[in-house]
Image (cartoon, rainbow, N blue to C red; front, side, top):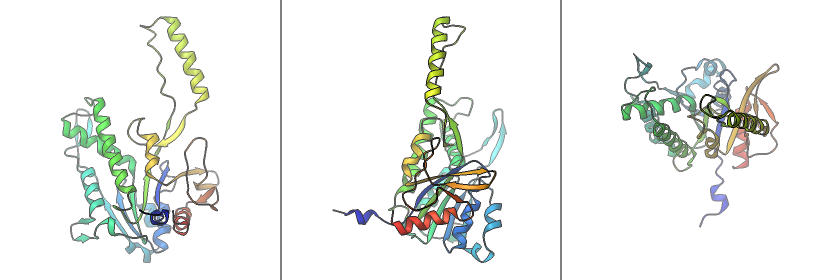
Length: 286
């Protein structure tokens, strides 16, 4: 039997959510500058902020693997000729090895290392591409079950990142955000009785007033978004306003922020906020 102390390993599991340009990637620089080794799976292709803010002497501590699928022009847009991103990410999470680089298994990495996925949003798109390719379909012919299969892929990958047995170091997963309101359907006015349409519209208006739209991770569909946070002990929101760019660490009515440590300000500057959160988790042993 294990005691609670056996589970209190000081490694973070952080979901860092925010709109593009809110400072997510650049905020990683403070970790490298402080001495952490960064292992980044880059699906965005936007490392300029990280390069700009990482000290020259710290850049050798940052290992980046950039992944993208080759795309070709078809009747339904640019689509992958053979999606490989999801499989490549899965292999890296099991054993970080490619070309002449072999950094071993993430399961063996310790708290001096931070594994970063930047970001979850394009990984979800890659998961859908993989499912459609395997099923012989395209974005115009995809079926409801394709969404379910892609969601299962992402959910399984997040479960691996959550596991301290499979990933022994800190984990930071970046993602974009989107607004989701109540899923309300009003009958078609051309086929439904007018009284039914009016009643349904009034009910939808009342529900919308009681349940305002909220922010969620920008992942596949509506169903997966509310459940992504369950894989992370820490969820923070990056936001930009007239005073600058900040990381929110306190609960908000429009987004489920959770930080399992006490004593942090409700807003941290992006310049060192992520570093302060990781160190607070290490000191708190959560």
